[in-house]
Amino acid sequence: MTALGSWCVGDSWIMGLPVDEAVPMLFQMGQQGKALARRLQRGADWVVPMARHSYGVATDEPIPALRRGRRIYVFHSGTWMPEDWARISAALP
Image (cartoon, rainbow, N blue to C red; front, side, top):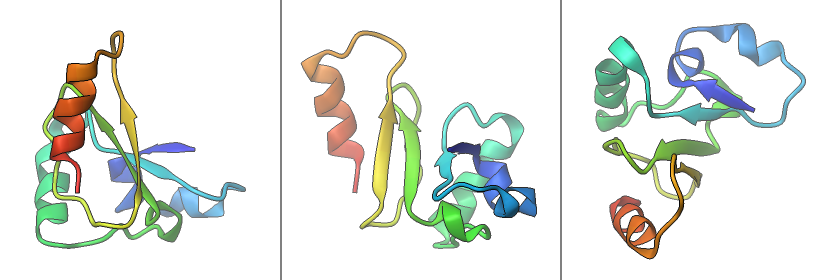
């Protein structure tokens, strides 16, 4: 399932859900976005274990520091063009 980044650091309610993976969405994070980006920059991981396998990022927002070796789901609000993929793939770990 997709999950707000804030759910993965402080809202432990998602730990009881019957899902295999929670994908932290690292875009459109509102006021908490800067704090979550700083947390990732420091190397901190998600509190919720099922969120430690992947990230969700968007092509139209800056990508925070990401750990290598995790799946990355890329969301794009428009029609994909080769230059969109080139730009986002260059920014991924």
